[in-house]
Image 1 (cartoon, rainbow, N blue to C red):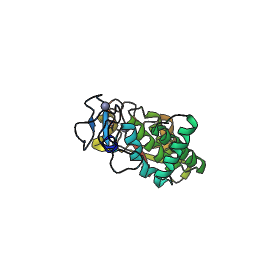
Image 2 (image 1 turned 30 degrees about the horizontal axis):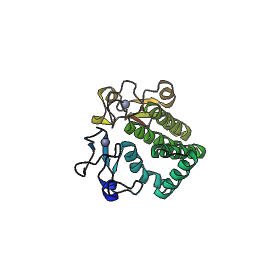
Image 3 (image 1 turned 90 degrees about the vertical axis):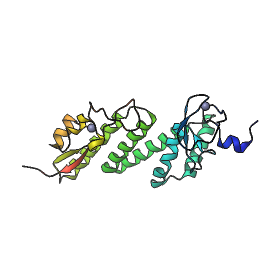
Image 4 (image 1 turned 60 degrees about the horizontal axis):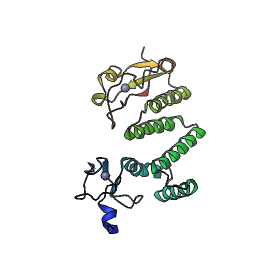
Length: 217
Ligand SMILES: [Zn+2]
Ligand SMILES: [Zn+2]
């Protein structure tokens, strides 16, 4: 049997095989070929070498803390739900449970601006996971439009892109001004023909967003 400190430090989080040396950054396991991430400054997992899903959870903890969920809260919820389920629930599922709850609370408060930012953030997490995030980007854009519409002082919005991080299709929209109503009907963003990427190579990620604009005529 491996001694516990070796097990804790230098084994693949997927296949449990011992690694030839302690990786300092993201690498692939020579035994199973899966990706291994290094997250040393966290106390959620008793090892620095984690899976991609676990790394996503680690990286989200500071954001959850900003919303009042501590690392301990996360662990308690994880333990409780695992006990109820009679098996170890995936930490990523715990994360999504909390995210959905936070989103629900923002919706109850009617905080459309925060809700829009939160949906965009959820889209980033989905992209990190390697999943399609279009629906989250779309609701982020829609919520931003609803926020401006409700504010009543603004009748037009302007599209800002990620400039040189955006693809050529998105960049064509840079600076475009349109009425809130037209934007809600046409939904020019997220761009359906966006071909730029954020974390995931298999799914595109449109960085375009709306800002309030003055009437320009
Ligand atoms: Zn492995
Ligand atoms: Zn775009």
